[in-house]
Image 1 (cartoon, rainbow, N blue to C red):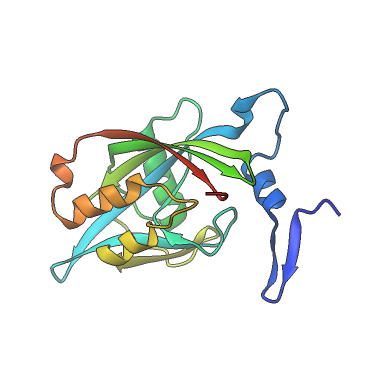
Image 2 (cartoon, rainbow, N blue to C red):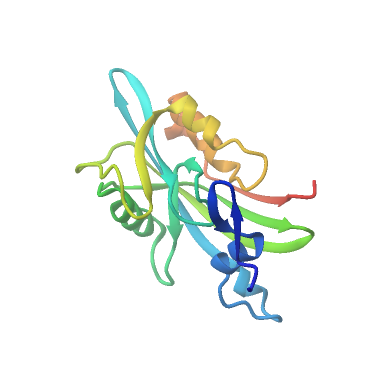
Length: 192
């Protein structure tokens, strides 16, 4: 009745209004801060048989349902970025890792000409992890993918974070240790 869910041949999914409700369940008309948050991105690599692999997840939750890519999540007030990355990794995969901050991107996204979200994405990187990977959790299906496939997964024009491929290319090219910290602002619109 509220237009939050749509039915398709494949089943039910959130509508654009439903996705916006998930992203911002308690909007206030006068406070742009209700659309602003900080989400850490976790990039984890490993080397298997001499080849670089990146931890990816097939998402099981909205607003990114069905997307394959690196994972991340909300940074809590007062939580350090590296701590948030380690917490999200453990929560979503069962793995432990020590992260370092590689860069940061602010993504301002418009849908149908209206501000949809304004998110700051610190990108944290770890070149190793410990523990046993949980292949499936409530968050998604976890898997190691070749680095070039991971780069391709993160290269969409809309609803993407442009800094992720930058970090992944530096991992692939073995220049991640020399990658200078970066900050970018990226405005995306479905109307462009």
